[in-house]
Structure formats: structure tokens, C-alpha cells
Length: 224
Image (cartoon, rainbow, N blue to C red; front, side, top):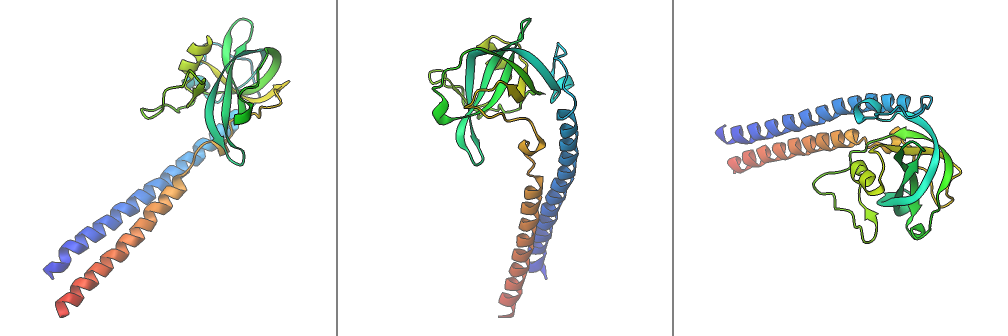
């Protein structure tokens, strides 16, 4: 009987831990779905003028409308878009007259990077956004090739001489033909908790099977 104690404790303990992790991801899934619902309600509300003194705590996802001059100064953030392949997010300085902010104009294919842009006046509807894309593994921008690897609002604002405020365009009129806007929608915000839960529950099933097999092997060896 003693030979079964350790495998059973190890096996049952492992299964319980994996089930708890899966259950936690299910709870996170419910929490994330509520957050996404709130984001959808916020992003699709009636747009207003920029309030001034914007901050991530007060104005994240806030819908805004603005008219100004989209300047030629821009940075290109490397990205990949489903069904489109690799390309860049084009983030430009947007001169509103009394201040300058950042404007995420959307996706540009790799081959269009050499296209020169001249300043033009445009009407923009979009959402304020401070993305959380920077961590210790994010490469520093390649300034010789003018390629960035994340939307670092503070660093890009410093580079382009604007306030640390970014509008992600929902519509730009008129719009550069080589660009496609990438508005903020819940579908663009990662929500992988169901896949994580499925992984943990699958591991729990496998762990339980391995435990039963080990117990059977011990019992079989003991008989022989």
C-alpha cells in the first residue's frame, strides 16, 4: 500500500492544481468579456473634442473628433496583419493649431514605406489610446531605418515633438490611399483565456491518465 501513497498524492495534487488553474482562467474569461463589453460601449459613443489634460486613467478609449493638419513627420511601427501580412503602423504628428498630438493612421504594406507624404488637412474621428506594448524584451527602435517595434507613446511623442496623446483613427477624410485605418475594436484586443483554460484542463486529463497508468504499473509489478 505504501508504494501507492506517493504516486497518488503527486497525481491527485497535480490534477487539482491544473483544474484550479483552468478554473481561474474561466473566471478571467468572464472578467475579460465584461471589460471588452465596456470598451465597445466606450469606443462607439458619440465623439467629442479633445478635452485637454488627457490621461490614460481618465480618457483611455475615449472617442474624439478633431480637425487639423497631418504632418509629414511620422514613424513606422513594424506589425503583421491577418490576411495582409507584414507592414507598418504609420503614426504621424497631427497639428491641431493650438497643439500637436499623435495620430495612428493605420496599416501600410511593407512596399509602400518609401511613399512620401505631404502635409494635408483632414477631419479625424478616432479614439484616444495609450497602448501597453513595451516590456524588457521590446527591441529599441532602429532609427537608421526609421523602424519601431512598439507604440511607445512617450518616446514617439518626443521624437515627433507632440504631446504624449495618441488618437487611433477610425476614419480620416481625406485619407492616404496606401493606408488602411485600424480602429480600436474588442476584436483587436487579445482574449485568449478560453484557450488557456482548455490547455490547463487538457493537462489535468493527461496528468490523471498518467497517474492511473503509474498506479497500474506499480500494482502489475507487485503481482509479478
